[in-house]
Image (cartoon, rainbow, N blue to C red; front, side, top):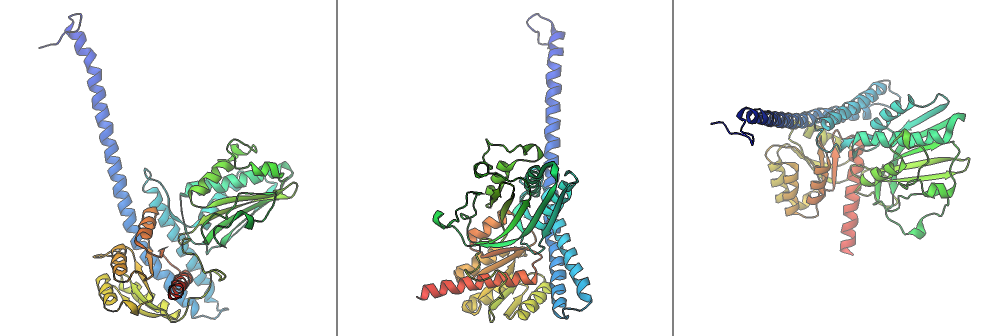
Length: 431
């Protein structure tokens, strides 16, 4: 039976309905394709995470054994040059894996753990090609800067925008932009009366939590700004006419705040400007002891329970920690580690554990260890550290979450912070 339209024309009614049916089929086809793409991307993300874990396990062995080999050689030994190249290549390989992880999940936020020196170097390479030849960019990037959690694309935008601002301040007369990347130690929030008075300074890092931060300084020898201009440079309704060359300084300020960091500026007329960007590192939450350098050697005599599901890494980790002066109990069985700890909870000063382990994950192990002894400091290592892992580590009470491969010096500094903080707490409790 054919349904008629208002004019009684059955054919007209049939033709009128056809496009709607075809449109519905097309919509269903597109929805199915979108679902398939989402599933493929999810599978790709899972595969990338698995590859990252296995690859970082291999890199941990490479970097650890390389560090031990360097310690066996005199400072002037010719083989040191080749071993340093191994360290550099391993760091690049680790950064490559993190990029794979980042771009395997394009529909999710792209915040991941990344190497700031590598991202800044790439941004500089791109921005140099857009600068006039009369502007010279000089860079000094420390290669031992701890990792950060961020979107690499956003970091590149931030760096490019600050350098674009510096280039515009220099103008056609030409000049120099100096870029320096390293680490700094902040003492934590201070009162406004503690802040140095300077009419030519805007922004402040005084409200950031105490701890170690990666800091990027960008200085130019351009025309500079007067105090009133500098005071408004991060105002979204104020422009210094360089927004067309980047995302603009107000956006830089917003991105840095969203990362838990800060951006500050100093300037004077005809004296150039310096903008400093402070990035919280992967272990910035664990403040170094006041008055002690970040690179201080770990206290001797500490007792470590070391847990990793790979025997080769247990052997390597045990050897490294013993070289650093610790007494180490190593195991490749998380359940065995839990049993040993439950039997003698006061026999260990710190636990160092992997995150991804069969049978009992690092997070599950940490929860059960803390249920036995709530004050035991736990340092966790993983080849895939993102915002979710960071948040879960904080909820559980893990003191430090480190991105593999973890260098010998990084592990040494981390244990120094953790054990020093634990001993200070114990002293305060006793008093």
